[in-house]
Length: 199
Image (cartoon, rainbow, N blue to C red; front, side, top):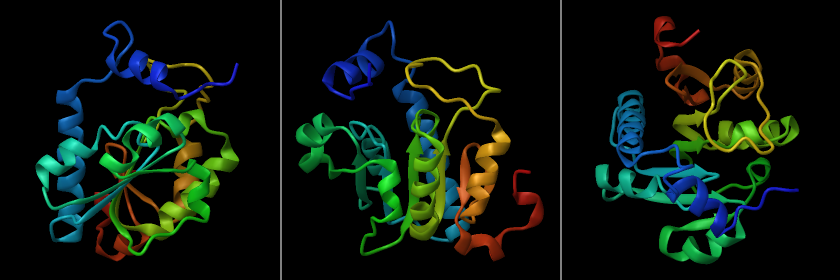
């Protein structure tokens, strides 16, 4: 049975204490880390964020708490999410692979894609990464889990690959690993010392 990202899915994996694997405190720490990394490399406060596969837009509140003037844009493949939160949280309907064609009127200081890639087929990942490489001004937070990780949570349609597979695909579009699921965009390559990169 194909997975459906409806209200029942989000109720189970994000709100039900028996299944939810995320905490508000952990999310705030991740957001603070990503903002700090991006601003360190950009040399200025971040102005905008694209959140791909954003679900109900849970990154929006902690990001705005850190940078109240931030322009947040979310994208998700769930019709439920867009119907319920599209206007109030600025979330549009799109699959990850559609980033190959989608473009906006600006590049993004931060692109977030968390807990998405390990559910997608390789062709869709490659297509979407092209868009990320082209639209990224600063840091991409691409939280993906591999066959070397002990993963908790939703295992339906899970596709675990090697870390080398992801690093190769990210490298193909010019993304440079700098640790903790963060990748520098191609435009920052000349500003990075060799030992700042995570090998």
